[in-house]
Length: 411
Image (cartoon, rainbow, N blue to C red):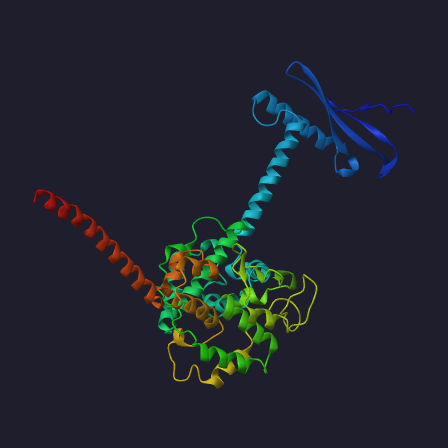
């Protein structure tokens, strides 16, 4: 097929070729081309079709601009450079618009559309996050662009919660959620800079549970739970005999249980390292009461499937009926499901188990978290003191013996 020839125009440096079939108006569509000499070389560049808005006058204006830039030594010297500059400008404008859009994101929008959906996947306690936000953060922060929030805004929330007489622990929880939202926003490029919550002093909290169950109380509790809820009864035994957290117990799958080796693989609810615990005979008997399932099936699924996120209120009602929390105001002294884990650790400490071993059994990251049980092991400390005293006495006796020998020789 013969190549279509270019037709010269009344404007120097501009020509066109016609489309074989396609028309634009009453004429065949035209494709415009410019040609010029620059830097001792001939250049030819295609501009575009008339159907795309190009006219002789417009093409001539474009060519005139290129030649002016060449003479002045400023700006794009070719159509290619001009188009590259336009593309770069468009991309810069898009980036600026995207940045402006990110900067205009409010704290409330990010919490609702990004943070909570992610928390539902990663955290079993996401409902608590939502409640704390709704109760203490939403009014102050929801309508503010997230990048405009400063430490003073967080201080005001803290003061307001103090005025309401809320506990230091509740304030600490609320500020922790506020801080986590900023951290997640930074990962999503919705926020940059220093986290404003980090500049606010967290309230000091001594929320360590003191109350633990006696053997008799533990037996009474388990006996009362059994007829009311078999899954809750089994979960209580597991926590009491292994120190597992509620979230860890709720996440157990049939494949995590190794009856032959009497072990449980614990998938930590706090997303830290997986650990293993060893089962007592009572734990094995209790687990055998549950229905069997495939390796990936939850042992204690929620009513509508998935992992349970909250302790059944049957536990609180049972504790109340047993009178364990009667007339007790200090929440650290109240019995809750976590008391079972605390009881496990307390019994170990009282029985002389090394605190480092207790740390490993509980899955604590730091031995400082386990130190709370040191006061329950007085016999261990007494034994250590007695052993040390024997060491001192032995050293003293060793020192005296040579002196006695020399005295006899002198005589």
